[in-house]
Image (cartoon, rainbow, N blue to C red; front, side):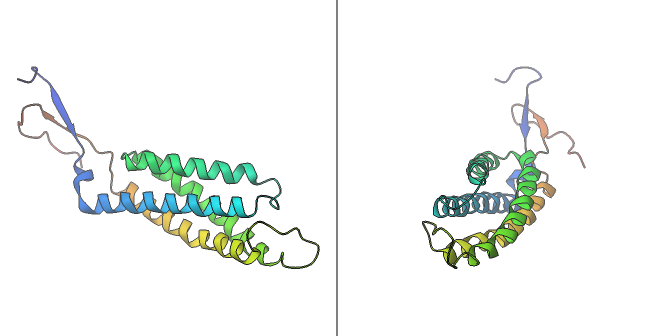
Amino acid sequence: MAAQGAVVVEHPNRDKAESRATKTIVVVLLLVSAALTALVAVGGWGTVQGAKSLHVAYVLVYLVLAFQIARWRSGLLPVAAALAIVLLIFAAISGPQWFARDKDGFADPAFDETILGLLTLALAPLQGLLIVFAARGFQQRWSVEVERPAGGGPRAAQPA
């Protein structure tokens, strides 16, 4: 028997198929972005000047964000979108620079410059998608809570 006055907190917006699909897409986009960023970091480790810690930080932060968003932490969706904006800018600017390295005098990275350029440029539209889906997830209001009495009583009025 439930204690007198005990309540159960429900999150009705998390039960919707659209919300579950959005969450899955955001998590996949974060994981793919982390993987591509890690590949660019590993492939260009010897030639990247000063951005090594930024690569590592992005990979770690994106992995943490993916884990937390998979646990329905909707407050991190704007953080993911903001970081995606910054990474989109970095990728759009640095991607073409990998293609310019195939001349004499440049150190050879572990991966071919063309591959690194393509991976870096692939990050830009991926971040665009992450921004869109993170905004969509935030708009779905995953954090709305509805209290109902423990024991299966009727729900309290839902907030607008």
